[in-house]
Length: 203
Image 1 (tube, rainbow, N blue to C red):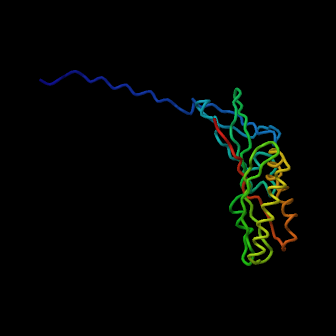
Image 2 (image 1 turned 180 degrees about the vertical axis):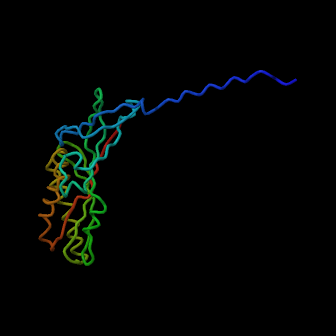
Image 3 (image 1 turned 90 degrees about the vertical axis):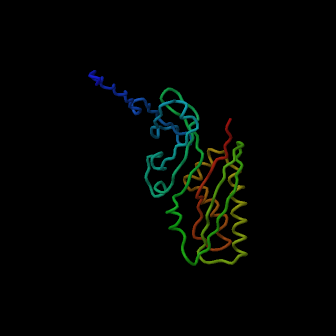
């Protein structure tokens, strides 16, 4: 016998709009950027914000969009949450690879260097530099340059606390100081600190 009972329509599953569950938090820059508000970050669970890395263009942070800011990115790590505001610390910067590429020309020597700098307040900041000579140089001069660059980065950086060193690195003052120390070895075109990375430890 055929079943004449009408089938009840199935109830539709309730769709939860996850976007409505998300909360917006204001990002507060560290003191080297005067603790200003630099943007917003979104999360469903507050705990998911802990140690999250925020990467922004320097112009977005400073509000100044000069030539240097256009090719510089800075990275922050979220260190605390208070209400709807997150505090951060500076953990590094990087110059745009496309900008670095514009500095590299034929018939010039390029010297890359990596140094770990111990600051006066006990932090370690790894600095990756690139130096470009005005002309091709011999291996002996390359050796002398690399040695001088490393020594000056460690010495000059070791005279500063993390806040001061970070500021000088980001805004180009530190690379200018190192350049001034090595320019008499051979005619130089440029020296840049192309990347910095803060040594971190987590609980």
